[in-house]
Length: 238
Image (cartoon, rainbow, N blue to C red; front, side):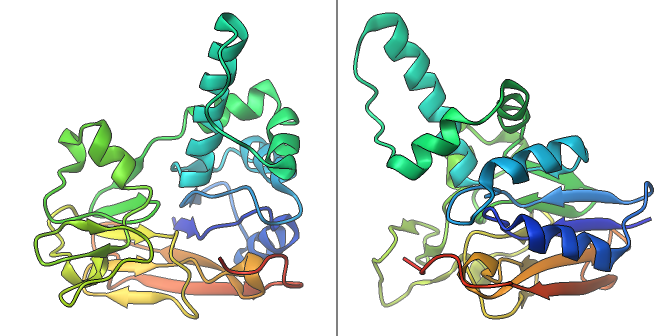
């Protein structure tokens, strides 16, 4: 039995279907996506429907969380007449307006992390000071965006740096388990002592990655990487 974890899909439905064919998925497999199903690529709505109907697990990415928050503001706006403080461009509005009730419920049910034995799937990153089981809302939301940390485990905003800054996985000491994450795009899978970074930028013309884990108690010793190349470049990196 395999646990198969997919990197950020971002609307790349054709590549995702091809990857699953390469993996020869069976009913015995557990499939989980690290978040960011939608936006940037060509088939955001279709990807959500597909993964829901295939009963594939999902942890929240920052993109799913944005749509969930937008919905809450949208519903409040309709009740009170107050303007929605979140601004969506035309593309995002189109995606939002075409998310079915079933698909939105699927997104809303996604947890911030999934832990199986010693394997943890989350979207972006973690610090050595966060306890997943006791994480408050602020810590949970941090799991969606953590990238660079200073030596005190303080998160640096995107684009900011410091002399002692390092990517979070290079500080991480493994106290919460082996982390499998996406969010940050790498040319190839980033493997550190206690983590795998598996967003290899399919939507930017890179590859879509799956991490096959054969023993979730010791994932660093029992894994395989399967990838398919993007059919084209769908978006530019920001």
